[in-house]
Amino acid sequence: ELESLTYSLSTDLLTPILSIQKTADKLIKKNAQDLSEKDLGSLKGIQARADLVGKQINNLLRISQLSQQELNIEEIDPAKVVKKVFKSYAKEVKEYQISKVIKDLPACCADRDLLELVFDNLISNAIKYTAGQNAPEIQIGYQPDQNPGRVIYYVQDNGIGFDPEAKELVFSKFQTLNNQENQQGSGIGLTLAKLIINKHNGSIWAESEEGKGATFYFDLA
Image (tube, rainbow, N blue to C red; front, side, top):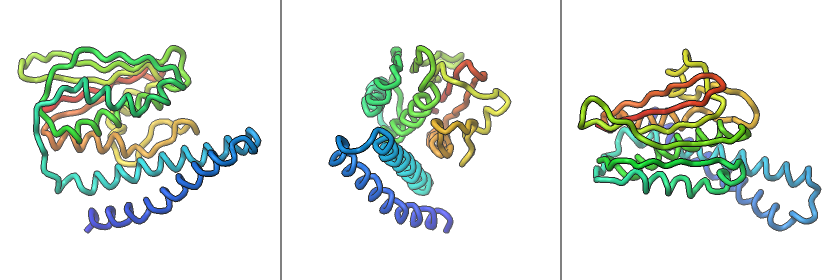
């Protein structure tokens, strides 16, 4: 019943959010030259916040559907998935001058769409917390394990990091570890990433220090 209610409310909320996005976009395109810098900035702020809310609602929808979803397992080249995700954030990467490093990644067996969603949430999280830092960098790689059949992937950034004692909280629903205005979020994305990895019988965890970036690790059983 809770999953059904979440799905219903999320779909209802998407309609006005999409309307706000569409209206803000039209106003910006039509009146950009006639608006003051302050008013244009306000409109872009509305658009950005609507985009954020829309993404979080979509994450809620995926969470509500995940328990009933069957995995479509196939062999995947994770590097292609990562490059696709980075392409969708090309504007942000360019704006914040983020250096991205994609190391050789061994193939894995997973649900392609869900794995893309994991990388999307981890990379968008890294972008959010490296934005504004000096020489921001995001690195995607893997490390071998003592078990030859296990591969541990990671997404690493050199952003603001977080208190290592709070590393379990980052995957909690509606939990964020930073309240700065330009780093808003609800924590749903990392919760979704964990649920997806768990559905693959894998594990996901984070390591960080305040001011020294963060690294998110996960494996796929």
